[in-house]
Length: 580
Image (cartoon, rainbow, N blue to C red; front, top):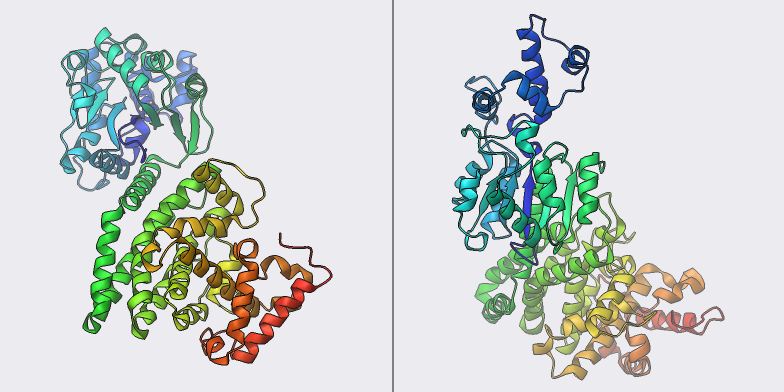
């Protein structure tokens, strides 16, 4: 829906209006049975269905019951009108007769251009009311006359097709005869909708509306997917048959209010994330540079980081798509793409502060990364939960590589010494981000396969490879070229690996530590070069000390040398079988 605005039409039934105390067809049926009983001189039955079955020797069906109470179409319209108008009793439900959360969420989808066509079996005007409140006047088609004279769908901002009519029109459809067929003009319109649009079905049983069922089944094409929303995953036979005919899919989405509200939030979050184009990132970059260049404007820089960081933390869950439903590989890739787009502004502002800012700006950088790494404890699917940390990992890598490119190891040391409330026992941010592995390897591999067009099996460091690729363009302004960037990336991962090794006390975990000793693509790309560089750093206490912060898990230069020796010992150990 987000990727192709306007491609999906909605098909909504009485279940969407239930929260407004507008009864469903089944509830109307039971209410009318009680009226039949009273009219027959019987006390109002406690179980109207059982009474009807005993009295008429037949299961109660909405079309049959309505026809019994009011044989003529105009009589049926007058009788049913009271079910669809707000109650006059001031002591009643204050939400009765008012648009529900579902209606208002649908209006937001229309306002944003993601939905343009809505087919409904409902007689009420709650949807029109919600659209009007959102400043939208839809084209409403409630009869064959309306279908004949309607503005073409493509030229209308929103078209509402009320296939059973409007409750103020005497031509509303209720009985089997009325529901069995549509006039040619309405048939043609529905055939166009079901051929040209995908379909999201909610609040409709699919059982009694024969003409609507036929229109869906006999639509000439299946261009887009049909999604059928249900509370429990169980569908009636009518819905099951229709879904099979359309090769559709079931969505377990709770009631209509919850489903449409969550759908709208996710679409809006993705839309917001995806609109972070080059211009908006450029604006953030320009502001950050202006604020960093002027010490007086430090507060503005802090505000910029706070606002861009809050934008990520508030919307990342929606971009991931929640934590209750496990992500497929396709959905996981889309979530990673969305999180990256959502995170670019804050990453841009952070790297500007590291590249050109002073110590006071690094304070703000560290604070922002810690905020990104704060994820509330939740119960859900692990892949979904892990991806919530991905923005922090992006920012952590971007800041570290920028610090190395700019020859500011003291800034890198600050980030490596940062603490966080993530699940690691000691609370080291580096340990938590690296060891918790926010991006599962299978997703990173799938992204690299997509981007390169040449699938490979068993990449050694797929997440590191992806981070190297995705950050290259963003960090291009801070380096003199790709080789300079890649060399800085390798050095950052090497030093970060040492800190993780020390923080995690991996040296005492035996050969099992080998997989986590030094996480990164430098293991296969730059191992000899990076270890030679590091030995050069260690030869000078002054240079080596630049990589140590007093709060770091490595407390001094001798400790740094010790950790390096421990790493080498693990690599030379008899159980080490090479890089995984």
